Every structure is written in structure tokens, then in C-alpha cells.
Image (cartoon, rainbow, N blue to C red; front, side):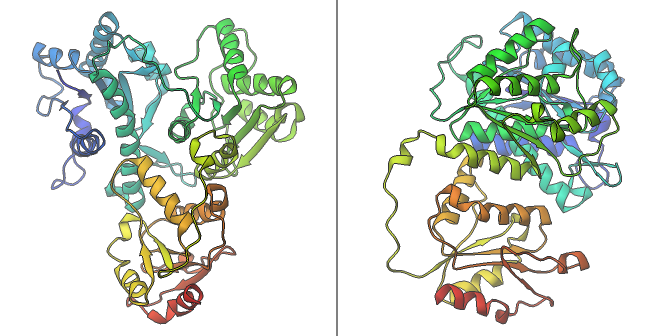
Length: 499
């Protein structure tokens, strides 16, 4: 039996550069490597690498995907037009439905990977109804200034490449959990007894398609930190059942989190508002009776939409006290909002670690510097790292290998216990630098008990006018204006740390 079957349109694996592999081929390879690292063994991933869209539908292929544990559908406009692809997903769905089931403990065995945006009306016409309730993984973004679609591929630059690997790692983490459940001796339909979470119960509201990826990231972050995230699966479609289910879930929750995007969303029958709007109304109503309910609402800065219904909903959230009841509204990047929510929920954790005595203050040994840099700058940062070490400082560097939770924990531990921080701003994107600086500002919430001896952002090549204008009130900024590292730039930083 195959662990994973990848369903795709063959035109989507045609490389942009004749000397490069196609997008699907690279996706197949990278996903296999990451899953092997997460699970300790390589999964069996199957796809048809040779057949063309006009070939006869081979029954051997049918057996391959019918017997797979998980199907990944790589959705594109061509996928929706392909009779072959539509038969693959339909036959897999029917085989799973009549066999062991489509869902495993609230998680679907069909996973959507959206490589290229497509018309939602075409999806409704050609794909099984279950697809409308499955969260997907978008491998593209829309440039807010130009409206252009930027696919996650190294051909579109370093940022797109970084986003590609970040997204595929999220996908691999989700699949690894699902495969472990499917490969266990327990029947697929059986519900495993989950350990009781040590944290809070968080109602993470259902969202529109443009912010689905953000919801998934926040759900994983909260789950990894010991919180219980509800709902675990899609909400009912029937209007009466939908409202009753939302109320029931909210009454179980300690906290409600709402993510607002550009789209207004589906309006249930007999309701005058969309599902996101309904969830906020019910959440606000509950707060009036249960004032201990924590409420958080997020929307991006300068959120622009052309839908008049969404414009009115956003205005309601910003101006109407009834809609805002008990809520903290954050208009910022999604990553900063995620950190904000995690920080707000931290005091409520009941983990035993909260009762352990604090580590004793360091009384001997060299001062330590946490040298933060993105993996893309691993080579460029060598001169800085060597210089700091030669000055007698203990240099801590980021962790890049291992499971996502372990990498995050390593980052937090180094940030808590180091004496000073140097952020290296080379070929990485500015967003990455801003995120790291924001994590420093929130370090007391992670358990840091003393101020940093020094905080410096080191601007290294490649440079451009906008990068050279980088300023911060939260850290000193030094600029390397030539291609050669100049130790004098960090002399003041070293004196502050050693002094």
C-alpha cells in the first residue's frame, strides 16, 4: 500500500527552465525528504510520472490511488479541466467513503495543495462536495500592490523560495501526524483517546479561503503549546445545526480567535450574514454572559476589499461596541498576532514546568551572544561569527534541522538565556528581521528575567536604498557598506557585552 498518492495535471510539471525539474517533481522530492526526517523513515509516495493527458486511463493506476492512505491533489486551472484528474479524486473519495472512511480523527485523507489560483465556481462544479470543507495549503500569494500571483518557487526569487520551504514543512508536519495514525494498529474509524491538554480551550473560528493558511499555522502553534483547538473539523452546513454547533463550541472555550480577510464568506440559508460574521456575533453575545471569555480579532494592516458586505463588516468590527465586546483587535502581521495570542494565553498554562525553580544566575564563563540569521545567510555570516568568538564570546547560532517544534523551542531557550543579541540582515527578507526583533520585545513573556546587554541589527550586503534606510528604536543598527567585513563596526557591541 502507498502512503501517499499525488494527483496532478502533467502540464503543471513542465519546468520553466529546460534544465530544471518541474514543480511537481521538486515538490515530490522535498516532501519525501521532510517526511522522512519527521517520521524517521521514508514514506512511500506514488505519482504517475510518464502518462500524458490523452493516454488511456489504466486500471493499474486506479488501484495505485485507491489503495493509498492519503491523496494530495495539486489544484490548478488545468487540474479542474482534466477528466483524468477529476476521475482520480472522485474515485479515491468514493473508495475511501465506502471503505475505511475519508476522515481520521477529524483530519481528512484528501489534502488540497493549491499551486495556482483557480475559479471557485469551477471547483464547485468539478470537485466532490467534501472539498469545500477541507482546509488547503496555498503555495502562492497575491502581491498587494500589483495584484499579481506569485507562486512559491525559487524561480520567483529568494522570498518565494523561502515561502515554499516554509509551506512544505507545514504540510509535511500535518501529513506526518496523519500517517502515524493511519499506520498504527488502531482501525481508521476508531477514535484514539487524546491526552488531556494542559492549556486552554481555544475556539479558532472558521475563516474564508484567503486566510485559511494563517488559521492552520495558528492552530498548529497553539496545539504544540498544549492548548486544545476547536472545532477539530468542518462546521455543519445546515443553518440550524451550524448555529447550535458554534454556540456549543464557544461555551466550551476559554478563548475565541477570529481572523478577518478580504472575502466576506458563505452566507448560510436563513441568515443575514456570513459564517465569520455569525461566529463573531455569537462570540460577542457569549462574552456578555461569560466575561472570562478572552476574545481576539485579527485583520491585516490597511485591509482593502472590494466587497461592500465585507467593508461594512470591517467597519462594524472597528466602530461598533457590540461587535467589539470583550475583544482585543490587532491590525498587524499574522505572525505578530500569533505571538501576541500565545503570549496572552501563556499565564494560563498549567504545565508542570511553570512550577520548576528558575535557573541560577550565571556566575562564570564567557558572555554569550545569540547570533540570529536566516538559513539563506549561513555562508555570509561566517566572518561575523568568527570575529565574535575570537573576542572571547560564546556564540549561539540558530537551529535549522529537526522538527518545527524543536527548532522553535531552541530559539526561545537561546533568546531567554543569552546575554546579547546580534541580528544579521543579509539576503533575508525584511519581514524576517521584523519578526525576530518583535520576538525580542516579547522575550519577558517567554520567561526572560533580565535585560539584554546589547541588541544590534547588522546590515550586510546585498544593499539597496530602502535597506540602507532601515532604522529601529528597539535596537542599534550598523551598516556594512563594503563587501569586506569591518571589525570596527562591532567594536561597540563587543564592549557593551564584555563590559
